[in-house]
Image (cartoon, rainbow, N blue to C red; front, side, top):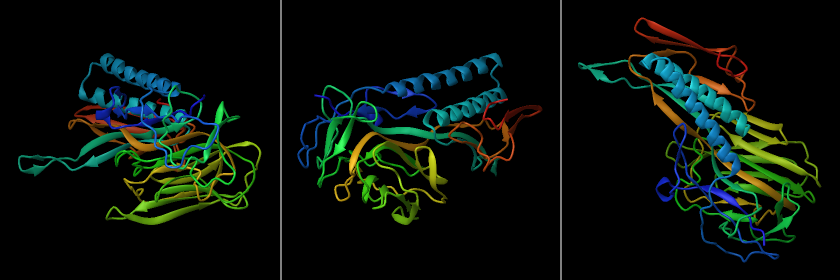
Length: 379
């Protein structure tokens, strides 16, 4: 029988496979569900298994390795003083962020921040500069297509794996179902930590229109359709005490069609929230604040109280995280924009950059200039 497959990030101490690319990428495991021609029993929680990496993840690792190789080769060719280190590191971060943006079709950025200066001889020195790359980190993927054993950790059992997904098999929600399509509970509090932002992406084919909840992270965010087929979404920001604060809502007034596959995406990159269907922007809001984090929140697809009237496929969940950061040597100062922002196409974001981004790096009497064109390429 076919089985639903998924990959999932896990604590670094639990996984025997570790990958270090632009920082430590969080190890991930495979989770798959044993299929059945009928509904899965309510409350079923299947065991866990590890099952490697997806092909796209392997390709991404190869691309990231190439960036680091370029960093190392550039460093060796330039002789390796601290100014050269900073220049080549900045180049590598810019290329890495652009690559991440284009690969995941989502925003990415490099930040140049200031941290408190160190005391020298009783006097406070210049603030330390830190370069960081912020981009998407895969959290979980569910495609319902294969795997030798079943493990999805699902409860409710309203979904049935059937032929006719967008690619391969899909998860069909039974008529009159009362349970979730599937539900994933966290094993530890860091599993669904989206305080820096998130991206939810899934494919849906609706048989009919009706109020439904496509997916949600309990008490944190949700993606919905109203009775007329108009998409909406919400996310909850954290307050100063770490509890739930403001709820930010997104509403579209365009109706989605039935009978064909649609790709829904809901994201927040730490600054901008977006609701997109088939690459068409339906709602967008600029937001100040960080996401609320509930360590007990579970992730669900097709809410049992508001089931999806149709079939789902390719559910993907990402977190916006700092993939790597580097402390600039004290002898080097970098002057330039605090944020190097890339669009999903890998271009410089014109809402942030009015022209090419220019960085001036100084070390005593030496200086270097780095320019990033509006096309996102290092010049």
